[in-house]
Amino acid sequence: MKMDEIGITYKSIHETLVASIRTGIKSSKDITKTVEQLNTSLPKKIITGPAFGRTNWISSLPKDQGTDMEIGFPVSSEFNMGNIKSRILPKREVLSIIHTGPVDQKHMTSKKLWEYVTKKGFISDEFIMEFYLDSNNPQGNEIEIQFIIHNWQELFTQHTERVLGSDIATTINPKPLEVEAALEARLEWAKKAIIKANCHASEVETYDILSSCAHVFPSEPIKKMKRTYEIARENMTPLASIDHVLAMMTKDRAWGDTPIREENVLIATKNPANREAYEKATTSAEKRRAACFCPVIRNSLDDADIPKEYCLCSAGWFRRQWEGALSQPVKVDILKTVLKGDEVCQFAILIPENLK
Image 1 (cartoon, one colour):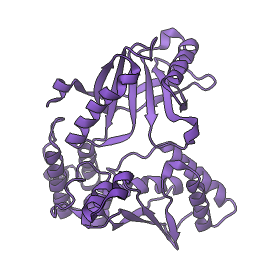
Image 2 (image 1 turned 90 degrees about the vertical axis):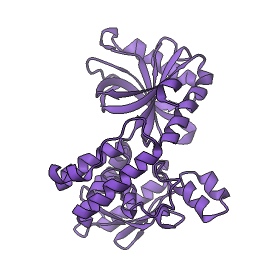
Image 3 (image 1 turned 180 degrees about the horizontal axis):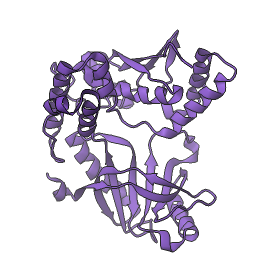
């Protein structure tokens, strides 16, 4: 079934100035209260569109404080007062669907969107957005739900051009896919692109390209890592300061399982994408499928033609964290991957020898 038959629309949205509140939300009534606070506080003349809610899936907020959400309005000029802060929402590509009716039925509309993106193998960034099209009544009427697309193909193209130059990149990158391309087409695109890149790129260059295509880990937890490391370095050695960061991470739910340090290497084992299915799995194939986070290859793990370098994309998840924390380039190696028969994905984060 095509997108328009389901009611789904593709949008490319420019960066937007917003004024918002970041808070814990326990119910839809909390959203309404926050929108009312913003409506009261913001000058009406600077509001340029309906209120929005951004749900952050990766969060340091304790679970008992509710869902980590940013509630705000697009605005024409900055406004900062109390807990209301202005910032720029980056440009984004989205698949959008409109829910009409009571808010307690919104999950049925969301289900249509999620079933579509799962079937097509779309990769998402680590948040989802809603726009309350009637901001005077966020409890119902019209709510736009936006799935944020992580455009892997575009990122791969950008980084092959950056690393190898535009002439070589032109020979590597397949023709861009249509938005409604099938999951199988996304897999074939990635396979062909990586195989061609391997013919032109060194191991270091391949790592740089593919690890730069990773999901965007939120900047707030990385800043927390960086602050923790820098404060520890005032009185501790580099390795002891890293241990201090690891201790902080174990107390913060944003990171999941904390890496384990073995001398100058951090060993990071990824939690299963679907823990319940992983624990119920009775075969290795079922465990591998439940462990895999990538919707493009999750059901094709026995495809021998998928290059192992594909999982360098996951290595980039850790690269972004630790380069942000240490302010230095960091190499991340693949130790285990479900793509090659392991039941978990595991990575070695190599601590720089010249660590400051």
